[in-house]
Amino acid sequence: MRYVWDPAKDVLNQRKHGLSLAEGIPALEDPDRDSWIDDRFDYGEERIVTLGMNLPNVLYVVSTEWDEETPALSQSERRSPMKLKDMISVTHNPGDPPIKTNTDWAAIDALTDEQLHAAALSDPDSQPFPLGTDEELAKLGLHRIPNVKKLRERLDLTQEAFAATYRIPIGTLRDWEQGRKLPDAPARAYLTVISRNPEAVAGLLGEAA
Image 1 (cartoon, rainbow, N blue to C red):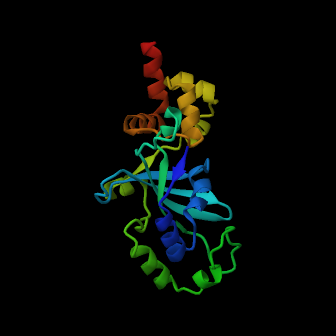
Image 2: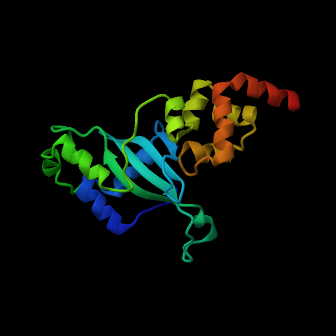
């Protein structure tokens, strides 16, 4: 996966949240990340919110798949890069080891919770993430993107066995697990059905073989 961001937005993110957007890449590639499609507002694009690790912190990253083609790139490199739009740390507290960055953490730690919250709310790309079950979040417009690696491991299947059982190309499965590509809407729906009733899906596919 290629990542892009607006340099001016990066400066703004460092001033408001104390983090460079580049530091969100490990969170987006965290195998244990959790991601949601954010339909709470009409952003004019499909927004993705991700909670993932960049040790020692959990980061909240807002991103979108970017469709702009760059002529200088080869055709294979034009695959929808991920554009980072906003990021905050959700676990950084005074005394915590900081992420390696040029950010003045002392200045950030000196802010009150109210000031930090106000700084986040002042940014149109940054909105608080509510807590709740998947069903409750879906009602608010946050739809979970299935973590394929977690699902496969829960079913105790190798990549090869999972791909064969659910008729998913092995290359596609590996791209999903490694964060090189995101499942599109039909794939997300299919993975959700698998996660809720894997035996039934496997049985139906077996009967259709």
